[in-house]
View 1 (tube, rainbow, N blue to C red):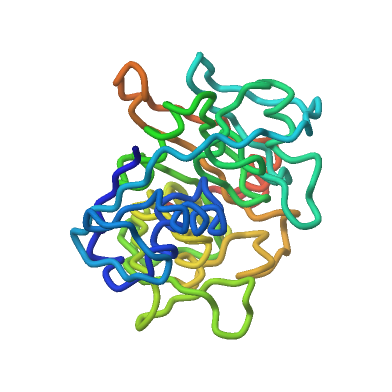
View 2: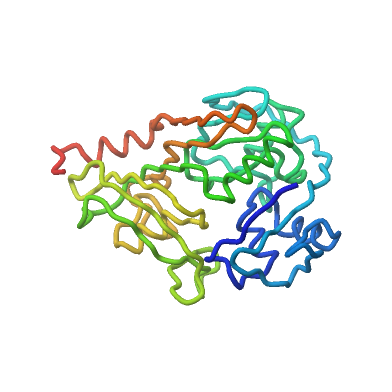
Amino acid sequence: MIELTVPNEHAGDRLDRYLALALPQFSRSRLQALIRAGDVRLREQPARPRETVRAGDVVRLIEPVVEEIEDKAQEIPLAILFEDEDLLVLNKPAGLVVHPGAGNQTHTLVNALLHHCPNLSGIGGMQRPGIVHRLDKDTSGCLVVAKNDAAHQELARQFAEREVKKIYLALVAGRLKRPRGTIDAPIGRHPVQRKKMAIDQRRGRAAITEYRVLQSGGGFSLVECALHSGRTHQIRVHLHHLGHPIIGDALYGKNAGARRQMLHSWKLGFTHPQTGERRFFEAPIPEDFQAALDTAFKQAPDR
């Protein structure tokens, strides 16, 4: 049983939309199917997909039936930071799509995981075995994968309840006015360009990013970003909003100077689902990111 308490920021959301945001390991269509099957209860009653939630509502999701995973295993190298019987923590390389989708049925992280761990948790459905959270294709760094259903449920709960510590590194254009600060700006779908997200004060979802400048010089800054929410493209949108787009981000800035966005999931902290121990992991900075840093700060930093 997965149990969630609706936070203030999601009051008024449709139930299926709230669940899709709170439980990103499930596709929206799978969540809607679970609601229709009566496996989701809202305020102690069977829920309906279009029903709206209120702050403080308790949503209970009956343990989903594990779907049989299609055999799409591929021998793709994995950079494993930690592994035990319950989970893996990976250093995902840039350029690797997390799970299969339109135009990406093979050579994804899921294909690699199925080769490494044939018996991954199937709670997320056959397209997302073991996947608890995601990173953009061109974002590198820490990513945790559940190896069994119990670990999947507990890790999903921690992500939904904002108990997971997520720290990123971003190389951005320009020098920030303040050495540290908090960006509190709601994010929603861009009104025209549907592949983009944007700041939307009226209809956007609450999004908070805490940042700290680690180094500045040569017209660039290395920024540490701590996420206090998990909106799509959150760091990319927030830094663009500040006027300091991420280097190489073709969607929100310019891809000049790098072949991909210089965003790295640096540190990840969570409570181990089996032992209860608080664990922290750090993904080494990849070579292309380090090369971009060396180029950006080839002159003496002026931090």
